[in-house]
Amino acid sequence: MTSGLREARPTQRVVRPAGLRPAWLAGGLLAVLVALIAGLAFGSVQLPPAGVALELLNLIPGIRLHSGLSDREVAILLELRLPRVVLGLLVGGMLALAGAAYQGVFRNPLADPHLLGVAAGAGLGVTVVIAFRSTGGDATTELPIGVPMAAFAGALIAVALTWLLGAAGGRDRSPATLILAGVAVSSFLAAAQTYVLQRHVDTLREVYSWLLGRLSTAGWHDVLLVLPYAAVTGAIVLSQRRELDVLTVGDEEATGLGLHPQRSRCLLIIAASLGTAAAVSVSGLIGFVGIIVPHTMRLLAGPSYRSILPLSVLFGGAFLALADLLARTAGGQAEIPIGVVTAFFGAPFFVVVLRTSRTAAP
Amino acid sequence: MTDISERPDRSRAPAIVVAGLRVRLEKALIVDGVDLDVRAGEWVTIIGPNGAGKSTALRAIGGLLPFEGGVELNGVPVDKLHRRERAKTIATVAQSPIVPPAMRVFDYVLLGRTPYVPPLGRESAADLAMVDEVLGELDLGRFADRRLDTLSGGERQRVFLARALAQGVRILLLDEPTSALDIGHQQEVLELVDRLRAERELTVLATMHDLTSAGEYADRIVLFAGGRVVAAGPPREVLTEDNLAKHYRVRVRVIEGDHGPLVVPVRG
Image (cartoon, rainbow over the protein chains, first blue to last red):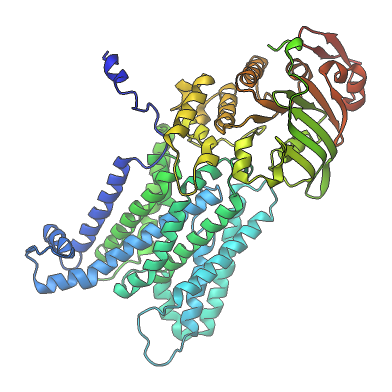
């Protein structure tokens, strides 16, 4: 053995602290790149992936490469597909990040924007805005600016209701109590939503096409609408990644370690709800991303939120962009709602990941 | 093992001073006017029947529960300390700490450095070195890369201690540190605490059920009953057949041992 060589490098740590490993970061970025190129190249009109990549490089100021795409193809690429793929990356990243944050905050592996009722609350908020806006005149497909705020208000009310209802179970409540509370809140809010819809039947079609989950009418307008929310959510949640690791030992011990658990929890819940609301307001109800992606990251890259959170953003975005690609290509002429795709692939995939993780401890 | 003649000088400064401590849990008064002091370097163990308020008092002293009355750590009221400062002063090892799933021993002990990590910052090389040192001192180096949830009870208890030591504190609160262990590991953990106390000049306040161990390791024993202190002093003065009969409703024989009284329950 060359033990002398090892002693020559005393700074080499035997055990590195948990955190985002460069290999995983590179993998996440690669996944985003693959999803981006695939999402742009494939569809009703096939574009050569190499040409797509060159056109993307052309977006960087000062670069002018010949991609071999016609003007019409470039227009399809930049005006139709790029905003849609970017929106998929943003929405997927935010839903996965919000899911990871909820799981950490509630110390509950089942927490997810949908199971907690947050998405239903945001959905009710959007429904109310769509139903009550001036019905006559020009009904554009663009979402009013107020939609994300209404969704945010609905999301916060929902998560507060779920938390209070779950807390009514007493101090020793099980993870299931919170989820049951979330199911109850979701049902209640869905009923309220149905009531609003019944009173405004004229908006039924518009609301339902949105509810099923869609990235289809997306243009740059929707991207710009969610971008500020995504930035705020991302910054706040990622800034709390170490706190989330400390919270895994419980509130009392976290307090003993100098943390303010309630303050961190409030901040994270608000940020995650904001992200969920923004995602829901532009894309409708897309399930499974918030629970599958963070879990997969946890099982593959370890339990530290310092790796789970950033990887959830990257892989969540890539997952949703690819799911959208499938949604618009697999069904022939008619698009499949993207929520159907995520559930269809998400559920079995999750089972596989769960089973393999039993045998291979990290 | 500390000999009686080597017990700390009683004139040393008090590390913990508790005066008129009252703690309510969900409106029930659990601790009802406790006075207690622990001098620097001393080991004091609180004993008492179930429900006497031992753990609750310990949690309040550690600043983990709201309370009425006064608790001073090194002369500073605990509620005046910023929570990060408090975490650098006093560490509590809970009776059965939550074991985060899949977390490695190294990362768990590193959580002890939380009060030293600036907000939005990350652990420094000094923090990592401190964890290495503590793991080495507690003979846990070979477990550093292992998952905490795969360790045995005795190994886990050492890891919990390691996290508390990583906080760099001089005052250690131990809530039932041996209740989950077999007698071999009980002795191992208590010897370890005693060794660390000497090496690091720690002040130890513990709660315990095993009266013989309590008497063998502590400089002084405080007997709780009904949320109050009913007896306090050197083990020989507190661990008497009369005291235990009265407050535990138990018949015991107290036998003189090498390091303190041996308490043996006997059938009535």
